[in-house]
Length: 169
Image (cartoon, rainbow, N blue to C red; front, side):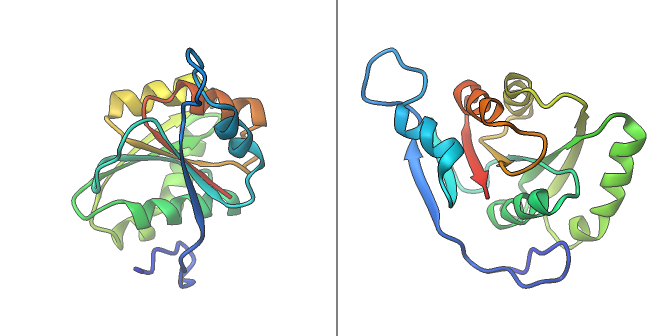
């Protein structure tokens, strides 16, 4: 495993639960198992709507907090050389977003993928899903223990996402 650390600490493999988004009942947007695991699973969970190809574009939410550092490390492990990583920065204004961006500059230089920054002051699930769709991202990486996400927002994002969602804990 590559060292994808923001702080210089060596990373290690973590357990991950992979499951489909839809349940067995017809007409449901999201199955009850996926719904429960989205908010209650103690390990990272990858919830798939359809298959994901290696090297596809990824969107990650990052605000500099320890919870988001885990998410950016996961993004570094998933992104293939030459692929695109969109970093969504939750910030009140553009100046605060630029400060967070500056804090990641050394980490970005260590990796061989294109990085696009976007900032948003309201991390509502449907808006994140739409941004991922516009950016062509096939995986959204969400730091579920971040102060930005309540259980309802996590479920909303997974329900509305037209891509895979990796829930990092």
